[in-house]
Image: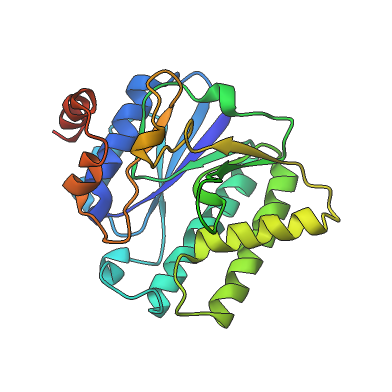
Length: 251
């Protein structure tokens, strides 16, 4: 049994509808205890829609991302928002006291992903070794062991804060700090944390060329450097099968 977690605001609500509808339609609910959604700028109508789904709990935040949707990464509110995701994940993990799975809200569930959750590891991270600099991405993350998961989250958050102080204009703090944290643990793992990889071709597939109809469990409609809009991001996976499902989900 595990909880699930994502972050959502009104600008991402179409993605949120895909995320939630596909989760409930294409995966088994037997092992899901609750679905926590961190509200970073949802409207009342958005919240009403989300609450129609059983197991959903809205977690409120003091950051309204609508204010920062066009902001540069150095914007202080934007920086706080980036930290909120990991801080609230830590909070939900601590208070829920069961394993927690985080999946970005611009993802679509195609089938059950349980086979990729391995409790032999304290945490599992999403590996994209084809990438030219950051081998891991924070689009999918699992804390299987609560105590050691909290320990890892503390390390990750600490590394992210340090990165923000040292390079506030850099951007992409979440995944880059995750990579720094993991690389540091490889060199010195005094806490003996057990970290396992899941792979983007199976979980949170963001590259159309890596998609495998039989093996890919989750699609990730990740933006690229040119910040594609909703339609552009969806159309990166040019597949009529998905198009029909997506239209059903966002109606």
